[in-house]
Image (tube, rainbow, N blue to C red; front, side, top):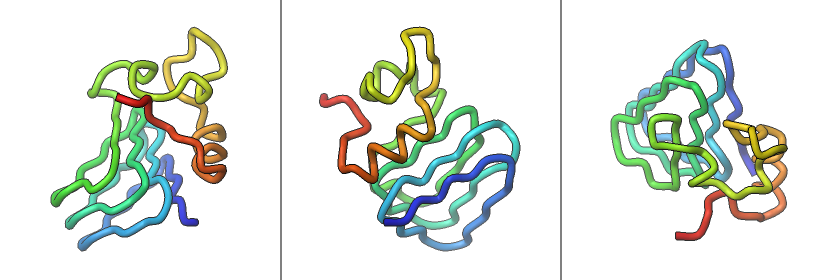
Length: 104
C-alpha cells in the first residue's frame, strides 16, 4: 500500500502517477503538479493547489467541489463543526479497507 501525504512542499511529476493508495495534499504551502494521468485510490486536496494535466482515474475531491461533509463519510470527521476530514482517519480508513466517499 502506498500513500503520498504531502504538505508544505512542491511535488512535480512530469509523467503519469500510479499509486495504490491515496494521493493527499494538505495546507496551502507548496503545489502538486502531475504532467500525465493519475491512477490512485483517491485524490484528496484540502486547502491545497493541485493540477493533473491528464485524466484523473480515481475518486477525487477538493475544496472547490463543495462541502466535504456532503462527499465524505461522517466517520472521517471528529465533530459536527469540523470543516475538513481528519488526516489520520483518512489514512486509517484507507488502510482498513473502509470507504472514504459517501455512496451516491
